[in-house]
Length: 166
Image 1 (cartoon, rainbow, N blue to C red):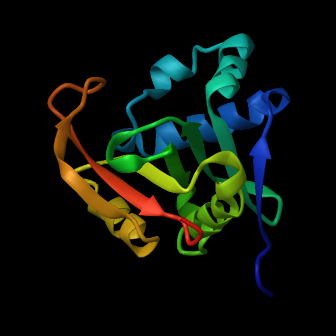
Image 2 (tube, rainbow, N blue to C red; image 1 turned 180 degrees about the vertical axis):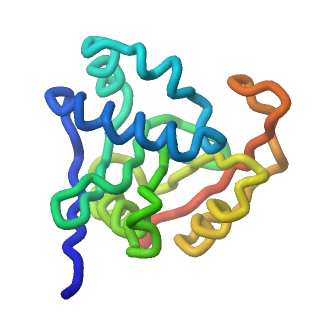
Image 3 (cartoon, helix red, strand yellow; image 1 turned 180 degrees about the horizontal axis):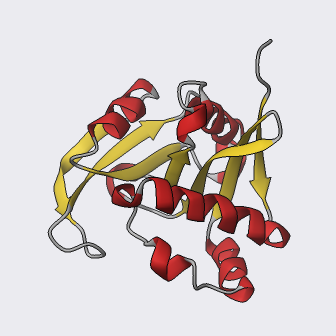
């Protein structure tokens, strides 16, 4: 029987849901993020709620279980980006099911109304699996590696994707 994938935009009242999946992501893939479990585990409810003021949080669930996440921030970025996508992660138990594709399709459906037509993101230059996954979704590497300000000594690659409507 096929699994049911549902994507939703969380609101500030669902801060605990965001916290729970974000902390799972930081424990599973600490190398993939600028933040750390140790720091983010100490944040209180008010601090988690503040994050919703600047970013849209999208969660994909499989049969009712939160299994992937991302955030979208409206901004005028490099290479014409109208938004920045970050915090992308999927639970290893659910990888290969199309969760990232489902979240980007969810994002694309709102691209015109929310100015998300040109999406940018940054990915660590040594995260080849993530780079390959983003390329399958239509992202193209832009510019050269950039030094991280959050993790000295690490470099990230900017990637850009235009929605079908852009």
